[in-house]
Image (cartoon, rainbow, N blue to C red; front, side, top):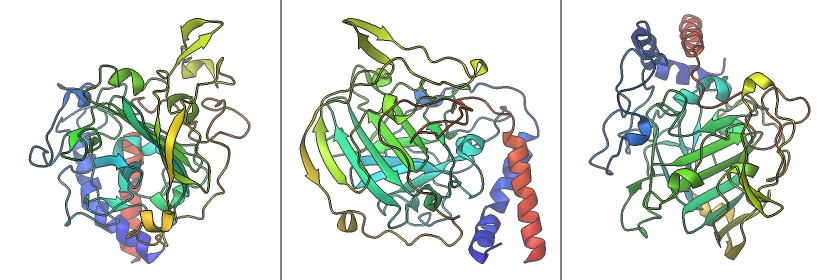
Length: 366
């Protein structure tokens, strides 16, 4: 085990042990207040932990929500994310290497493109192409990146994070998001509805204006198996960094066929892989695009950690049909091949216990 990896396991050991201890008594599934109904003002109204429920099936929140200069490092467990513009955004990534998104989605932490948020930082060079769109009702960023540099497993098809989930606690548990985009930069407002897909070296992040009448529809979270092309239609290109204005896309899952507006119903995983989707999502027209210089835009980022596994090549395109969970063939960018991101997984306990075992072994061998 590399020294850097060992140090990160040691740094998280006490948190994981307490996480397991609380999980020992499981009495229920649903929280008293759903995550999407928990509203906070930034910075003074943010609690140390947003999810304080005890005895629920997925245990307790792994990280914390009060984040500042004392928590900004590559071991940070900050679960307060920001999405402001093409240069300033956070993705949800694993707290430790070695687990797929499907295994650890409830414990994801914020990895940001700019210092100053008290989080981990996306390493320099990890982002290889982005398209930022500002529409009347939402902001959206889609891009190509080396996912191993935010501790994702090479080749992981990924999944989706959102503030809902089958148990209403969101993924990650306690994960909240703020933006100054909807206030014109004057203040940070909490983004109530958002989605973040990532996998196959591709990601999309959409944050909907909390004052908009259709925030929940534009940031619909139920299409977690069909990826970015249907949830965040775009024209992102690897190697290009741009920021544009755009029209609104259709609500995810809504399309027009022969003049008739229809709504797609995503089949349950029990019916097997999704081999085709009966429509192509309309990519909204964009304008006033500005090309960005990645070297200057993403300045101040650290170099990649030596604990990250070898990078897998960037694959696919930003649009197209996605196959579903367990599908054969080559998965597409942003596709969730690990199942519904909102699914309540009882395997969390075994995963965490396994991590504790690794920590113990590492300490004995150090």
